[in-house]
Image (cartoon, rainbow, N blue to C red; front, side):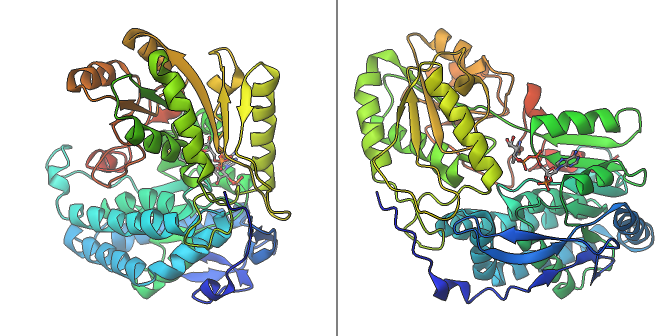
Length: 476
Ligand code: TAP
């Protein structure tokens, strides 16, 4: 394992960082009325990257008013084919600026460049291309011959896939004739600000997309604004619950994409090497900051002794370090607060009797880092088996029968994702049918595609994003 943190300054040169980013409202950049700014840091070394404006209630008012005006006078009146042209244009500019976006996302979030380059940014472009194609075909969305946009969408997104979550929210909203006011997470606002520049470059009419940076209070003011017709939120279950309460009785439409505690079930007949690879990427992709991460490994007892050493050997080969190094597998934890959360809950796992293992390593001195960790001997009652850790920590449980695997996989308040590793098609289908999870992967994990709906059961939220289903959330 390589733990040297050596910043790669040359790759930063593709990013022209501004010192200060203002709010993007009505097609232009303007300071927040309160004049307040927050600083976003590079989590790999804690150096400041830029200052971004903190939007207050007056800024929310003017952004919602701009979005309303644009929806009623321009965007909602335009033909679907015309709207589609703008979305295709945005998709192409994202592709043209992909290197800059990938580097900036890695700097602001801490995730490895090979993920931003090969996963995040290509999927962002793919979402805009996909929904551009739908813009003139809404009569086929399954909602009648002439479905109508809802109006103004208030959208709040988290820090784990900053630009991709923006694309998941903005592309279907615009394709369906809605306008948006979006709030990125406090710790990862920068790719959203470049996206604002892309909207200008695409000559998107003013007010169709508005971006308000700020912390949780900004998000709260936005979702509670009476001018929002639709609220779309991705984030923690706690905040989602609060939003659901505030939206109740207002007539606003709501979709929630919340947390998860996905199970990766490995049966004794699975192709072991492939399963090891899938379990490793299932939890360590994006430092485990993934709502659908395979954070619980359920391995059949008869193969557990063979599986675990192979798993640990593979983890020992992961490279942790500079997010801008193309060879890096595990980058930095996004913030000091998240690092503290991961530490606290992982420590309770040990205190409750689990055995903790990490490959031998020295973590870089500056920045926020957490070594990949495996907890074995975990029981269902342990916090590390029940609560979302949202970090590079795998909790291992065993099972004897398929019935027990399903019972343990479903024994969680969440219901977002699961994986099944087996060579038997019948077993794969038997298991998938019984899992209460919005997405079930088999012999693979963390595969995303704009054509597939994504969303949860139970405390993982409701509504679907992606695919044709993703249009329904924005049409009345
Ligand atoms: P949250 O604390 O819930 O933050 C999400 C967003 O909501 C951020 O932009 C946040 O702003 C904002 N926010 C905070 N308090 C708010 C309030 N009272 N009203 C309105 N907005 C508010 O979650 P997080 O820590 O950023 O993200 C991690 C969580 O998101 C995990 O639980 C993860 O599972 C979940 N997640 C789910 C999915 C899907 S698709 N289901 C995808 C990604 C993440 P600040 O950041 O500025 O505080």
